[in-house]
Figure 1 (cartoon, one colour):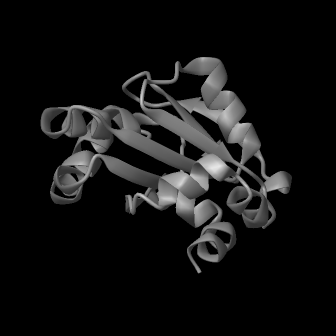
Figure 2 (cartoon, one colour):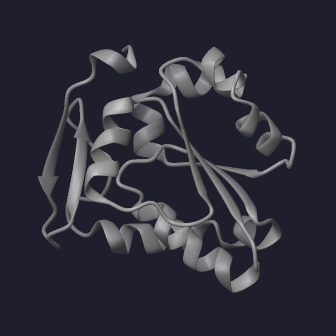
Length: 150
């Protein structure tokens, strides 16, 4: 499905955090998104320890990114996290509810060609960041992310 034709809404998790739901798919846990994010970051501990440069495929409401920042800060003085989000409405919604953390750059585009025209993203990719997939976001935009990775 094209990222411009997605249906996006917000729901509240049992833990009271807000969770975006894209085409019926919650982008985070509907029980406790912060706990889910802690587990997610811990599952990537080895990767996050190796490099201060991380490329995340999928923004959601960035609970997973916040937790990865905590892990990275323990191991690296400086870090750079790039996030690719193909759905501009997800990005706008996140931006209206959350504040952007230092060291994060969001690359939002509805097509891959436009992403590769972004000089900042290309310079960042030359640093060979570790690539981490936020699975719910990836699943909602599988064609986009697959094309980006190929």
